[in-house]
Figure 1 (cartoon, rainbow, N blue to C red):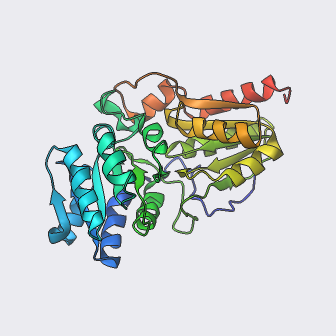
Figure 2: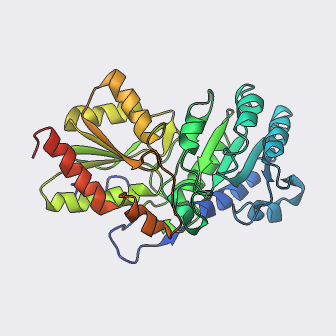
Figure 3: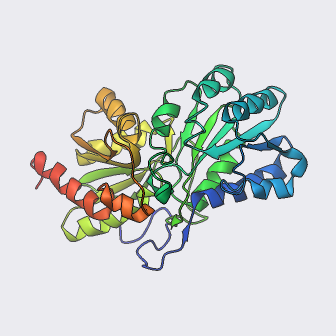
Length: 330
């Protein structure tokens, strides 16, 4: 465990750590992107305030399009705008976008390699009381499988803003996964972010813990707890799930010899699946995958659900111990 952060992290151990929804950072970033590029436009499907696109609508009313509750049309219109030189951000709940309109994303966006930005709000377990119908847990798998698609899941609102500005410059399709609930702010304005890069938030030698989205905060807490147990965990934050930063993850796996993945999504096709596939071909390594295991979510507050499904810091510690014990490192 490093005594000081190499990545300019926030004081995440502070019990009063600031919390914000990642959607907040997206909304702010979209306005900045609009100021920087007059071709940036935004579309929404009757959820403008919920996904924070209202900020863009207020700043650029003539560059905002409300398509109503018609998610397939949302993507088709966005693709048409992209074909005419615009940089469209198409936003809705992830349960509908990509949940309802995946075929349109495939055929009108990805097949034509149009630079449409699919914004999936209210994704994952932090959707909370909305329950299983709206807790989109399959979106990473759905979007990762599409040719030409970039897939990003930021840890907090600060990184979400950076990711929004970054994808606004990409000439290919992108998917940005956002949370509904306020989650701890783990990074700062100085923390690095670039598409396709994973980051060692805490260096270690005994086990590699790869996480994405808001659960990176839980992984950081788990590293502190493991250190007290005499285990030096390396925490790798993986905001870009596709393209995956294989070099950073393989280098860590070679050093530690054990990999644990953590996500609030289906492990089949999610971050855990992506890393297992990559390591299987490049650096076979004992590993465990933490996340949703072939089941749907439930209604409850976000933090309650993270604990209920065994994805909080305490359960990460338990899984790390179990993995290390299974390979004789304890």
